[in-house]
Length: 599
Figure 1 (cartoon, rainbow, N blue to C red):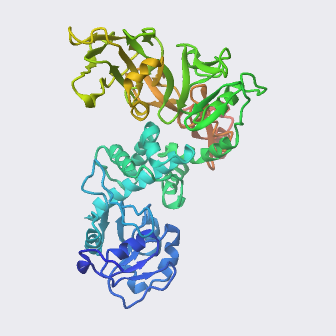
Figure 2 (figure 1 turned 180 degrees about the vertical axis):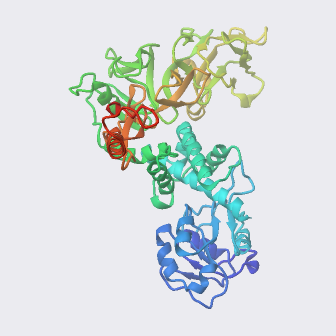
C-alpha cells in the first residue's frame, strides 16, 4: 500500500469506514492504521485517534461498537449539526473535523478545499487529536487548520448553512448541481443563506464574519460538479426546521420561514415534474438547450398559457417566451411561426428575428444576426439593428464583434459615449485579415462603420462586420472571408424584465436598477414567474406549523400563526363568569369590563 511522503510523522489511527474518505485517510498514514467497517468492534488496546468516516445515520452503531473508555478518542468527520447527538450520548465536546476536501472516486487522491476567498484552505479540526489529524492531512498534501471551540463552531455552522441552503435550493430546481445553483439561482440561495445565518447566530449567540454569502458561494464554485439533494434531514435542514417549530410553539416569529415553506413545497415540485405533456406539432421545432420541443398553436387545455408554456420551456423559471401572444410574458416575447418557409421557421415577432435556440441555462436566445458588408461583390450591405425600446440586448458574455478585411477599421456607432471597434491588418498572416472586440454591456444598437486604414491599399476591398456567438465562430470559421457568401451568423440576445420591488417574482442578473433577468417565483408562491406567480395558501394546504391554540392565517407569500379568537372568547368568558357578577358593566374599581361580543 502506498503511503504519503511525510507519513512517518502521522499518528497511527483506527479508521472507521471503508469508503472514499476512509481509504484516502489510510493512504496518508504510515501503514500502521487499522481500518474497520461500520459496526465492527473497535479494539480497546489500540492507542491513538479513532477517525469516524461513516454516514451520520451510522453513528449509533459506531458508538455501540466502540468501548466506552475509548469514546474520548473518537474524531468525527461528519457534516451537519452533531451537538444534540453528542449531548444525548454524553460525549460533551467531542473532537470534530470539517472536511472540505473532496474524494471523487474510491482510490483517487483528494482535492483540497481551497477557494478564491479562502486560498489557505477551509478544512479545520478541533479537539485533543486535532493536531494529529492536521499532520495526517498535511502529509497527504491537504490543508487543515487547528481551531479552538468557538472558532470551530462558527466554521461548522457556516458549512451547515452551505449544505442546507445549496442542497435545498438545488432540490427545488430538479436537482441542479451546486454550480448551477450558484450561477442560476444566486438570489434565491443568497436569501436562504442570510436567513439560516441569522437563525443560527441567534440560537448560538454568535456573530459571523462579514461576507458569509460570498464565502459560501465561492466554495460552491470550487465544487460546482456536486449534485444536490436533501439528505440526512435531521442532521442538516432538520436542525433549522426544529428552530422554526420551537419558535412557533412558543408564539415567536418563525426564524426560518423560507426553509419551512421550501420543505413543504417539495411535494409541489415532485408533482409538477409529473405534469406537462409532449405538446402538439405546429411544424416548427425550437431547440431549448439540448431538448427539442414541439408545441401547438391550438390546444384543448383549459389553461392554455400554462400548458403550452410547459411544453415549450425546459425551465419554467427562466424563459419568458411562448408561442403566440397569449402564452408569453408580454408581446415582446411572443414567438410566431412563419409557414411561408418549408419547413416553418420561428421568429420573435416584435423584432422580426429568426430564433435558432433558447438557452434556459444561459438565459439567452440565439438568433440569426445579419452580416454588414461594404464593397463586397454580389451582396447587399446588410441591415443594421436597433433594439431601443425593446427588452433585448446583445450578450456581452457570449457574443464577439468581428471585422473582416485587409487594413480595415470597424467602429460600432450609436453607442455614445463609448467608442468600440478594432483594426485588421494584412501584414500579419496569423491575423487572417480580421480583428475582434468585446461588445459593451447593454448593447441595443448595431450599426458598424467600415473604413480602410490605408489610402493607397484596399480602399475598395470587401469588408465585413458582425456580432456572432464567439464559441460558434471559433469552432466553425477557419476563413472569415468565406462569410461574405452568408447573410447571417448566430448571435446571442439577452433579455430584461421590469420587476417591481414588491413583486413575488425574484430575479437576478441586474443590468441597471430597473431591469433584471433570470427569474423564479419567490418563496410562498408557485407557478411560472413570467406568467404570474400564485400565492400558496399554506393554511388551506396544511403547509404550516401552527399548533394548539394557534390558528393559521394566510398572508401574501407566507402565513401567520395567531391565537384563535374562539379560544380567546372562551377564556375571557370563563374568567368573567368565575370572577365577576355578569350583570355588572364595571369592576369594583370602576374600570369597564371586557366586552366579549367583540371577540
